[in-house]
Length: 437
Image 1 (cartoon, one colour):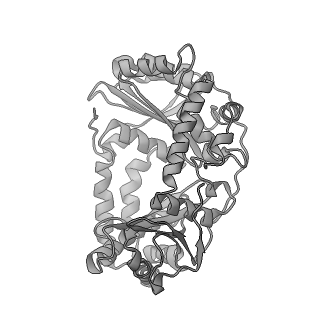
Image 2 (cartoon, helix red, strand yellow):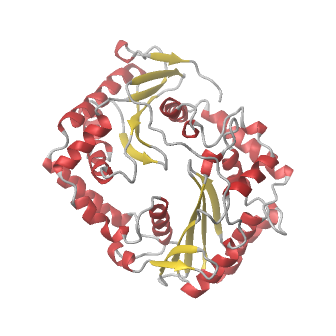
Image 3 (tube, helix red, strand yellow):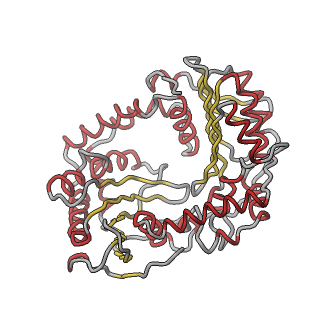
């Protein structure tokens, strides 16, 4: 069920910054359009806090933390969720442990109580741990035959080496079997705290009631985190090209390089110019690689930013005998925009699209809550949503050209996964064997 919200400028004016009696902070939009409440929250730490040599601990915690807690075993816990149509989910990104809670207004007390026990008294029963471990290992085995998964994983290894950002958030076939219940309990104790807690709530609830629920839900968490420091890192600079041999019908090309961080003064210009390069069916890459040359069904790229680094990363799929031609076409487009920047018409069209499309991205309570959480994680001000379109409008052609040069002047890191042999133009600088990890 979706909750229709007003346009961003109106929604932004209604965002409240709550501080509960217990000191819990949240961004809150009250809306009684339908009797629903959506909450998104995050705690700093994420997969970057996995122990050395054991990637996947945070991911296992996210998969197991709602498999029984408090007085309820796994089956009873999920029966409570199902009976009240409560949606509760957890996940990890590289920097954050995240949670999502959605419920009907009348079920809010039970929903928040289930979340509280998940965070403060998860069971991690051995039978549940082994069941989830088996599922995770099955997924990791499937990834060994997925060209997209292999390309993405290898790209991050190339970009970040032994930095925590270079490790797979879901772990590996070697690491997941070694993760213990003690590892998961230690992760919970170190990461799931109030110190870096960010919360966004949208829905049919008043501020006073929400404050009580937030204090009851999060007030029992430890006050301070115990985090391993994560160093700043710039992704490896291009060029570098790798090939992974895999007998699949379609060859996958993942490409990218260092990006521009969210707090960089050039970020908004980079965001706009990247839309021009690879942001959809009107982008340069789409028109050239798909429409003009017929090399791929789709091609796109996007900016990705973490707390300690940033990337631009894209992908496409093509025939093995045209992989070299595809990489060359992408490289040429990137070289041209790095050298010359966008045209004035491209800049105007990109601004128009990016301003209008934002409305579609905020048309439900869950989407708005997710956006408000992301703005907090990105350390943006509470009025950012109100100011955002003006910031897009303010990007000049010179700023767009500078951002394009910063992003793409060095060329590309590329990882190609597919059948060998490739055409002569696609022969890799280095070829690596397929490994099950």
